[in-house]
Image (tube, rainbow, N blue to C red; front, side, top):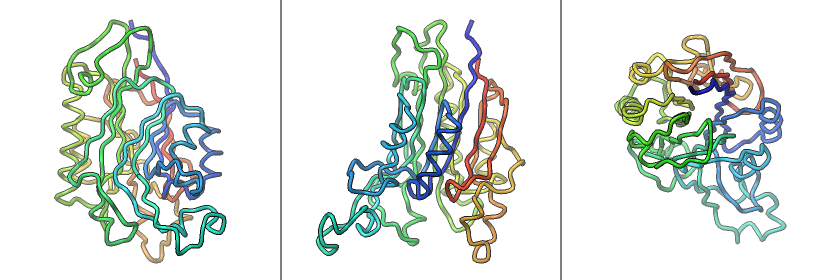
Length: 302
């Protein structure tokens, strides 16, 4: 019989890779999650760049995660004056080209990753400029990994697991983990693209679990309000952890409510689980680590 496993899970939009990097590190080290799902993560290995543009490798190493997966959504063109730590130490500003850095979603885990996959909703991976005009056509993806919660000396076909084909080994506990940053818009309501995103996510969960019903955890910044038909499509197969308990998931200290009061009533960050996962604790602490607030949940699987 599988044993009961308790997990602490955190989901957080880092805010441009982590503009409040010291605060992020302090918070995450204090929480010590077993599984960490992040959005707006940058993945450069150029040591001359600011930490937020190297957030994937720095967080992986600083938080001592043995297993991680990065799902790039687009290649962002960023002015060197914004990206480089010390321009005077590198070259005159006029001689430094813009930086092109991958941004996307990341999953960090204390448990082995048995399989990993990234699927795009509609717009494929490509270049993006960090300007308002490009936000609505930014590529977005769904990151999907399978974790082995009870690792042992056994192997399985990772792609077969993602495709919903049985490769079960007795006594093995696995968990589907899905992470996303949803399609952006100037409002939090349904659009044709977002409705298709809801269908896409629901289909991915259903397909992945049709043969072996491993528990499912889905989280991220969905970029829309929870009371939408898009989210309803997902809630038909998964249960919302926070349901209607959150008024907003934004850090209002970092938002201009005079310009856009809608942030005060927008709970765009969500976490959903399959019915075979028990929620032990849940919170959305009001900490100043990003322009979003983290979702912190303790789960019981098994």
